[in-house]
Figure: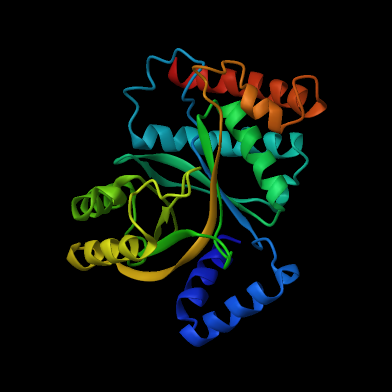
Length: 283
């Protein structure tokens, strides 16, 4: 499925303006024809942001965090999926670089052919167990969405955490609005121009300026030399919980059916397994 998502980027970037206009007219003329994205990408980290005292975590490098993410992917993520009612066998997940506010960490990217509600529930389960402030849910084949995306593709096997961070910094040097965050898998580094609750992009850039800035960054970067291989619009939203104000994960719990729900009780059992794993690694 990860490969299929990359194929969607390529396909959408190659559509003619006339075809896009026709598709837009079809969607706007008949709202009943509008559909959800075929699949969702869920972006998150396996190391906790709250709730644990882990002296070794602060000093852990990318390779240590990536190794832990791989363990969490094998031992914990399938249990979270099963707890929220998603078949873990239908998930396609990679350990990849992920960036936020000019810092790159090991992250997990899961693609799943699930509904919007299922994607949000899975994200809430991940955020609850992994103690994340937010989990990003994106659907990159949504023609009616307003969040812009740009795919920056590197030569085969060239995109590692160091290259991803270097390009992240280069993009931010072109415009600080490009230093908000990115996701990556395979040879692709993906930048989303995520929109806030006020309807404005966090970057401060409209989608055209967002694309122009990343195009300039790509033209000036290298080696390795990247190319802009796709752009368009995507559904993108953060599912989150303010742990400093909601220490029990109340926002996530609300999305999961309440504290007494079978889902939350199942996730509490998974969280106990996760706590043992993370403390054995970083405490």
